Image 1: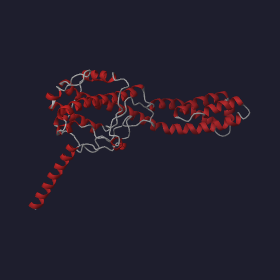
Image 2: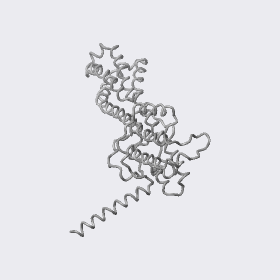
Image 3: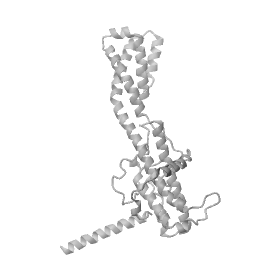
Image 4: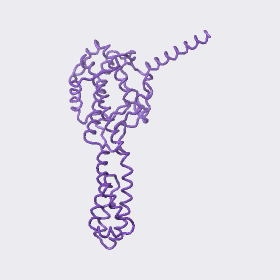
Length: 329
């Protein structure tokens, strides 16, 4: 029994050593208890928000994997604090400000701003998704009534060019917003032919009555499932916060390369591991500057708005808790 216990202990030690070696080979600084809970003050958040908004459209699209990226950036920041005595003496070129201890420490605040803005964007995106899910059933019912009434008017306007034009206009669109407008236009048409509708034998009057109930409901639900200006702003601010983190990391990395090129210390400042797609081009896994999308649910790249995380097959730090960022978008 003693031999078995000894073998098990040795095996566990070997696994731990391999894990540390793998992590260090990826260039990740060691974790620290200082990565624990951190709170950004309201005043500091407001200051960073102003800095983020000053970037305008010169921002990177946040690619997702918040938890892993926060850990990675935090380790770079800790390494920079360790090496601050050297880094602050880096002779950056003219036109670029010198690196300061305040800037090094400030990266922690920028990382926390990224956390906060991503959470706000996710909340807005989840509200949109819930609204979109509830929109489907009444929309499908309205589409059936719309079709029944169009069939009625096809016959009624068989010899009316003007009437046929109105029907063509109603049939022209095929999106959710078009459906809401079609219902409104169709109800107006029905009110102009109310007597004929009441006499129609295939339930047209009941279809009109039901559409009158559905019309305001669909309009309200459409507004709920469309990203509001506030939600779009939260996503843009999230991308700007990510850009602040990336820009800060790049300055620290440049300083570290000046001081520690050719040594193991440069591994502590390595960029976040590239995806397989980015690896083929030798680029860091970062979004394109000024990347935008229109916020439509079916076109949104989710993370909140970010690309699907399943598309990012990167070499993440091994000590990230499984499932820690499963719901990021």
